[in-house]
Amino acid sequence: MFTLAKKNTIGYLHSPKLSDCDFLVHAFCTRIGGVSRNDYKSLNMSFREGDEEFHVLQNWDKLASAFQIPTENFLVLNQVHGDNIFVIKPHGDYYSSHEALNYDAIVTNRTNLAICIKTADCVPVFIVDPVKKTIAAVHAGWRGSALGITAKVVRLMQNQYGSKPAEMLAAIGPSIGCCCYEVDAAAADAFCKQRDSELFLFPGKRKDRWMLDLVEANRRQLLNCGLTAANIEAADVCTACHQEAFFSHRGSGGITGRQINFIMIKGDASCSPE
Image 1 (spheres, rainbow, N blue to C red):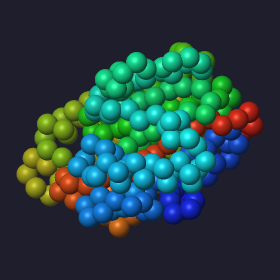
Image 2 (spheres, one colour):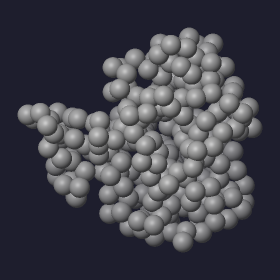
Image 3 (cartoon, rainbow, N blue to C red):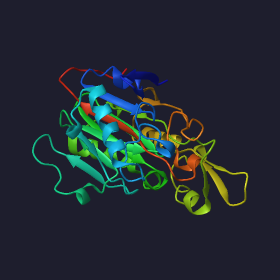
Image 4 (tube, rainbow, N blue to C red):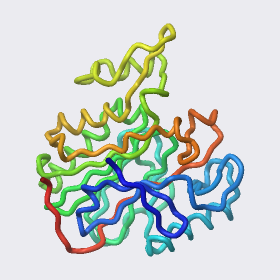
C-alpha cells in the first residue's frame, strides 16, 4: 500500500519499500500543489500540452523547492511510446540535444540526478537494485508495455550492472485502471502472445473491445523476470477514477496536464529486500 504525503504544497505518493532505502528519494506526484489553471489545474509539469509556460516553470520551481533538488537536476525524457532505454553513466555529459532524449526508460547509478516520468494514465515503474545501487524509471503506456519495456529494463540491469532480480525492488505508480481502460482489437492483439495475458486482458462489454490492466501487465513482466511478488508494490489507484488528484488523458477527453514521477540516488546508505 502506497502512502500519501505532502511537502510544502506538493501532494505525492511513495512506496514504503523504496522509502526504506536511505540512499533514495522518490515521489509519484499528484496534480495537487501547483499554479496552473483550468484543464491543467494545478501541478502540471509538461510544457507540451498547451499550458502557459510561466505556470509550468513555477510548478517546477515549487517541486524543486519542496524536495530541495535543483531544477537542473531533474531529467525528463521525450517519451515516444517505444521501448528504448537511456543508460546514464556515473559521470560526464549524458545528452547533447533535446532530440537525444527520445526514450521511454532511464537506467543509472549516477547520484543527484532525479530521473523523471510524466504520466496522465500511462504506468510509471521504478526499479531499484539496492545492492548495486542502480535505479530505473520506466514509462509504460500500452505500446511500451506491449513491447515488454519493463522486462527489457530488468534484463539490461542484469547484463550491464550484474543485478539479481531476486534482490530488486519495484514500485508501480498511479495509472489508469482496468476499470476504465478499454482498448480496441489492435491494441489487444499486441498483448495476446505475452505470457499470462489472460491475467490482464479481458473481453469488454462492447464488440471488439477489451479491458486492459496495464499495472498487472507490467507486474507480470517483473515477476517473469525473477522479481519476487513481495518486492513489487503497486499504488492501485486509477487516474481516470480520481481526476481530482491525478491528470487523466482518457478521463479528460485528451486535454489535460501531466504529473511527474521521479526517483534519485542521494547518498551511500543501504537497504535490503525482505
